[in-house]
Image (cartoon, rainbow, N blue to C red; front, side):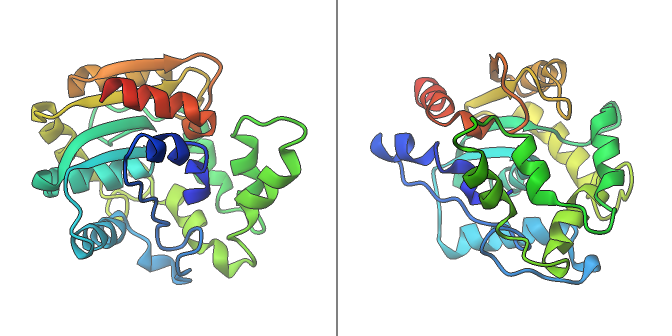
Amino acid sequence: TWSYLYRNVIPTLAAAGYRCIAPDHIGFGKSDKVTEDDWYTLDAHVTTLQDFIQELDLTQITLLCQDWGGPNGLITAVDLPDRFQRLVVMNTWLHHDDYEYTDQLRNWNTLSQTPGFDFGVVGFQMAPWSVDEAPTLQAAYAAPFTDEASKTGARRWPWMLPFAEPEAGGADRQAAAHAALADWDGPVNVIFGDSDGVFTAEWGQQFADHLGATFDLLPGVGHFVQETGPLVAELILERA
């Protein structure tokens, strides 16, 4: 996915006076598409994000993170704590010894290596949608992937899950961040959809307990919590 995922969250937050920045990670959205498989590691993405934050000199950050944005953003918050004020954690994880990967996540790891696999369609299928929205939504999720080479990043993300590629997936770095966040002293809000087969509601509650966070469970909501738009934005504002 890409920053398009936040299109219905940003207006409510911006109207409340927040400056909202939704970067596209390398290989996704409108950012450059590196086509070498070996470039895509968690360390590379964390470095890129940290450079981005420091180049813009961002401070008092409220981090919104979901899926791979969790390891990327939460490691960054641990590394640069003085720049972060608050964490909002949505349907994501941090690898550690006791974490149990779901069958759906393991299947995603396998399917991502299928030649010609349509990542845009999968993103579209994992999002809530109405019949009227369907064509636009599907086109938007597929838009960044114009040919097979442009899908390199999308293919590599699920393949470098720590159970498959511990080094590329930053297994040790994720586990260290998971441990460090138990002592995080800023506000943390965990928001999970209860219908996600990738990151379950049970895990969301466990993660919230570990982080000392408030926990909001959204009924009937799947993997892409951001697609609920104003609902998520209002929760963020209520917890502020």
